Length: 264
Length: 365
Image 1 (spheres, helix red, strand yellow):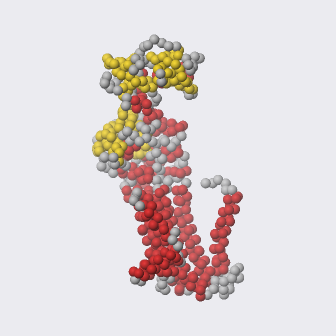
Image 2 (tube, helix red, strand yellow):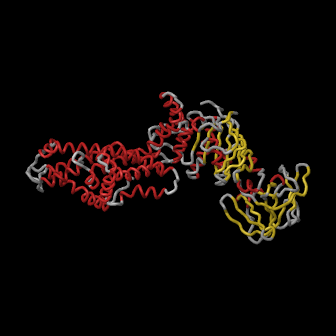
Image 3 (cartoon, chains in turn brown, red):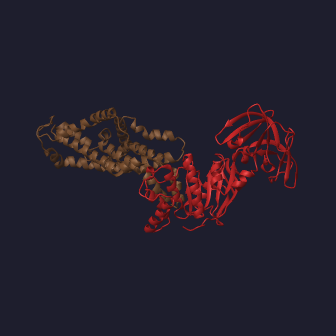
C-alpha cells in the first residue's frame, strides 16, 4: 500500500482532479462577486448572495423539501434494497440474473425517459399524490445504487467468520449484529449516501413529477436562472456542492478507516 | 488453567447425505478425554463434514454424537461449548487481537475485568503478549494462527476441533506450530479432533488416527499401529509409501501367515492380521524395510532377486527401483550412510530381503 508513487502517476492524477474539480470552483468564485449579475472572474468580495438565498423563503422551502425527499427515498431504498441484495447474494434463485438486470435497468435507460414513463403511468392511474410519486420515481433510480454496493459488501462477507462466531458461543442474533453487520455496514452506508445524493441532485425525474408545493432544489435553481442572472444562482449551486462535500467527508471520517481495513 | 478437562466424544452410526450423494457413511468413532484424534484422508473423503457435524455446523442425516455421554446431536452450535480452529483462521477483521480472544468469554457472560484478564493469559500462553491492540491483518500467518488458538481455548472448551489448521503456513513454520499445538493440547488435557490430508501431520500430532475413504472409516488405530500394521492397500498407500505384491494366503499357523505370489515367490509375515485364505490380499513392503545385497540368491521366503533399473538421490536416502519379474518393480530406500562404497548401479543383479516382522498383509480393493 505504501510503495513510492511514480511521478507520472502523480501528474495524471493531478490532471484528472483538475478536470473534475476545477468546474466546481467556478460557481464558488462567482458566488462571492460583488456585482448585480454573474461575472467571471469575480469582482470584489461579498457573502450577501448567500444571505439572500438563505433569507429567501422559496429557496428555503425547496431546500427543506429536497432534504425530506432524499431522506424518505434513502430510507425506502435501503428498506427494499438491503433484503433484496441479501436474497440475491445468499440464495440461488431461478432467474437471478434476470432479476438483477431488471433492478439495475434504470441505470441504463435515460432518466428523462423513466421520468416521462412514470408521469404517464401516474396519469393513467389518476394519481395526484405528488410526494408519493416523487418518492417512487426517485426510489426506482436510487435502488440500483443501494443494491450494487450492498451486494458487493455481502459477497465479501467471510462465511467462515459466522461459523467461528457460532462455535465461540454466539447465538444467531449476535452473529448478525457483531459479525455480519460490521462487514456489510460500509456497503449499506455507501449505498445510503449514494441514494441520498442521487435523489438530492435529481432533475430529470423530478421535472415530470413535481408540482408547486413539492419543488426540489434542482428545479428551483433552474427557474431562478430563467428569472434572473444574479450571483445568488452561484450561491445556491455552491451550497449544494458544500452539502455533498459534507456528506462525503462524513463517510470518510466515520467509515473510511474501516473500509480501508476491510480492503487490506 | 485446569488440566485434563477433556471430554469423551463419541460418534455412533453417523451418516450425512447431500441429495443422493452420501458424503459420510456409518462412521463410528471415539475420542477419549485428553486424546488427539486425527481424521485423515484425501479431499472429498468426508473428514471435514464429519468434523463439522461434531461442531454442529452440519446436521447428521442419521446417527448420534455424544459428549461425555450426553447427546449433542440436536444442540445448536453456540450451545455446544467447543473450540474450533478454521483453515484460514477466521479471525474477526474488525476486532483487535484482544477483542478476538475475548469474544467467546463475553458470549459466556464473563465479567469485563475477568474477560480481559483471561484473554491476556491465553495470549501469554501462545506467546503473543504485547499484541493485544493489533488488528489481525497486521499479523503474520503464524501469529494469526496463535490468536485463533488462544481464541479457541480461552473459555476452556470441552473439545477442540481443528480443520486443516496449518494448511496456509509454509513447511518450517508448520512444523513449529504442530509441535507447539501438540504441547498445548497435552498441557491443557484437551480432547482434540483434527482434520488433515497430510499424513505426516497426523503422525506428529495424533494419538489415534482414523483413515477415511469415500465417507467410511478405513482403519482407526494409534499412529504407530497405523504405520506398522495398515489393514488395507489404501491405508498402507496413504500413510508412508509401500510396494504392493499380489499374493494369496496359503496357510496361517501360530502367529505366522504364509503367502504365495502368482510367480511362486513365498512370503512369510508375523504381523497379526484377521484375513483368511478366501480374502483378496496383497503383501505390502515399506521401501525402508528392504535390505539389498549384491548378486542373486537361491529362492527363499521374503527374498527377491532382480535387475536394478534406476536409482535416484533424494538427500538422506537413495531410492532404487529393482525389476524382480517382467514389468514388476520393487522400490527400495537405502539410507545414504549405509549405501557405502558399493551402491547398486543400473543393470546389475541384486537381491532384496526383508524380515517377517516387516511383511504386511493388507486387504486389496
